Length: 605
Image (cartoon, rainbow, N blue to C red; front, top):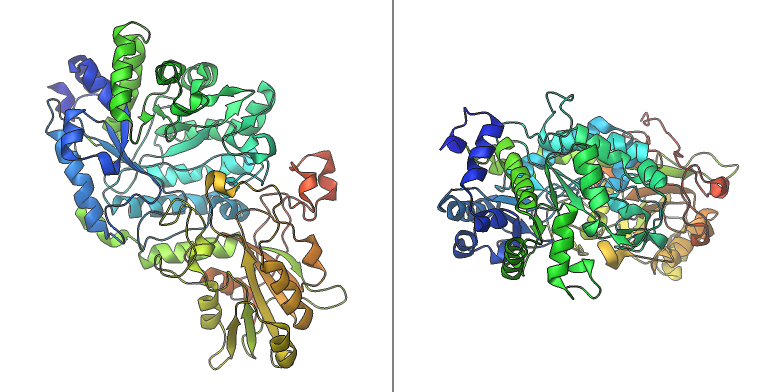
């Protein structure tokens, strides 16, 4: 069997295998099911081609890498025992590190990485995340999100590098970190994953226009001309294809009222044919169900529209038997031609062969030590430092407040100062993320402050100090660090039409900064309304969602490193101004313009 011979040319192997496959085996390849359903019996009976972990879907709470490897290898053994032995491809969200996994390194979310303006840093992060994912036996990630978020009211805005398509294009360098650097860029469109077990197949998402919906409504409608869609939302996909991205995920959203999951023009005519993308196109979670309103109202119609639009692999976490039965019926009655099925399976096999799954289907258990290792945490800490944006440094007529002195009594206040979950945000351990310090391993911002100050320095933490405490101690503290922000959220749960700092943050700012010289550190997935507080604040830092390495914040506050970050988003005064993006006429009235960021030099102690 030539497809099993690694010395044969790629297309020879694909042709040989495809020619041997039954309809059931082909439709199995097009099916991606949830981990909890992927028993050995199910994988072998339904000839399942792919398995995924949804957000928070794990083999066991706090499972170590070895448990993940055992689980993935068990599924793989079931797949390899079938007639043709086609390996499964296991996929997982790793949008800012291997977020589902206990003690993984959590990097800043993309909104912060965009402020670094460092594509090479993004590439290094991609390579580190790939190693941590491979440490758990997984070869495929649903990342990066290359959305161009045009309205911060969108609950996924923190997954976007920038409102500016050029910044997002540059940061697609993370794909080369995930997959390895494509050796021949002239062969644009061919999926590429470097040989060995140190890289993963990547997925650029969500195709296309997900960041442009009206009022930032998640899964909403993007109203735009074809020219604007091409100019604003499509450019990152050009770069992703050039970098050899293996897969593209279709967006839940619509373009001018047409669901992207049913858009033949953009999925097949543009992405597959015009851009010559030769990897596979995957649906989002139950994406076909959502073609109809209400969801799943006419599943046969949904499957017909989605598959004919050009979707190759379908994320059907739970209803896989219904999908397999219905797609089989649609092929047998001639509604969906076999040529469309063969195109889908050819693309899936191309990715599996390219990434070496046929020749090395099982996980490399020797990589377990890559998860959360110090080198990766140091890289994440560097990314935190470079993502911070200094928006204000000193009141008019006064000198700069930052960098802070490392001696004298320090008051630290605010709900986000000592909360690892909040500084990581959504897509961390669970889908929505959680507050608290018992989720995973890392360093809070308060921990970082305590490590940064001189020995013997008095650091007092009070989450919400009252007026009496502040009045009694105002002479005691040289300054205060106030850390406030948004709670963790993901997707629709993060949609927000007012974008105010959640309570009690505003009161903490007013009370503390009204009594003591203060720097406010804002932990958020997007700009928030801060103009009412700017005058009372001495210094203001946008820290975004920094992840597990909170010491990166203190590194810069205390001057071990200078501030270098530049806004990747326009900072509005009021939500009434939204949408507000660089180049818009009314951007002149922004509170802080796109690209703004005060630079400082490291302190000399």
